[in-house]
Length: 261
Image (tube, rainbow, N blue to C red; front, side, top):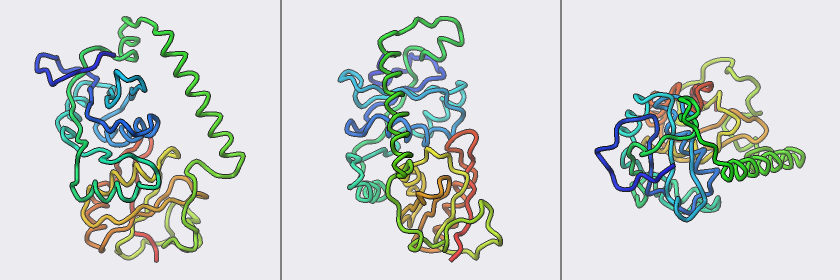
């Protein structure tokens, strides 16, 4: 994949968008997950590419299933603030606060990619194997599987530490994916049907676009759900209306309701 460089109006619209001006200190796996979360609202994503090499730092490619999705993503996300600060978990809350208060250094610069992604080349029969990259990707995938297996065996779960259930606004945890009765409108949202790979960072980047955002709380023992707190009921309602049925993956439209207190 060739870097897109400065914006070039001569590049024809295609299914792959090239993104630069990304924060170079973000871990590669987290960057890919977050890009997928933010861009999946525009259509089915076939692949997200980002590399550790010096030549490709601060850059990524998002491959959509069709040109119209890529075009809409390019239009809507141009200049979007994305990871203003290094994303060490200890500074996550401060980073999100800066993001939500428009203290931006890293805004997305997007254009169409100059060359095809491998997945598109495979589909149209023009693919040429890239053996070295394949070996590196296989090695990284094996390492991720081993890390997930070790975490599960240690009983840590995929998300690390989470607030005690007693501190969450939904007493006793979520006993069912569907609340027994609708909760009265309030400032805390209950989010369901999240894919298991969802992280607090992904949700924070989505929900902090709406005024009054305070925090996201995920339940380690119950993957697939989260609580999102706003300053007041009206702010929570606005966020719920804006993100209802948002798809982090094509199979997982978010189901958002008011949390029970």
